[in-house]
Length: 128
Image 1 (cartoon, helix red, strand yellow):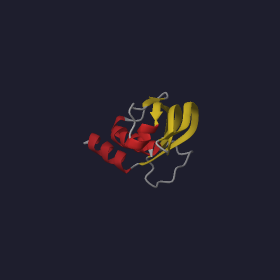
Image 2 (cartoon, rainbow, N blue to C red):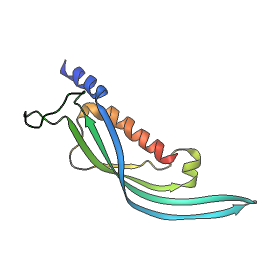
Image 3 (cartoon, rainbow, N blue to C red):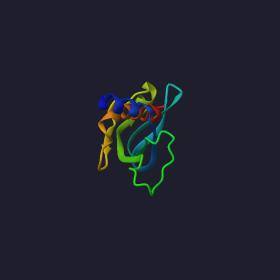
């Protein structure tokens, strides 16, 4: 059925994600010495701009004159990270879940699982 075909195509499409701008970063950081050991403390709020490209061309060469629908689509949004602390970095996870915003249109539903994977990787890479 067509739902299964769409799901298979979604798994095979090439997806790339990029953080292309740090829109805002606020907070403070300090170095303290506790029992003779230096520790870095920080608390930040960060807003990142991201874009994701979904390439459904599957190696086809595109021609802009043949009237076919463009097979590479781009989606943009922001990711807001609130109250990132040194403890988050030490634990390897965010205490407060990042807030995801999608600009304008959202990707087709069959990509939801792959997008969840992409944003999971992005969060993981941000905390490391």
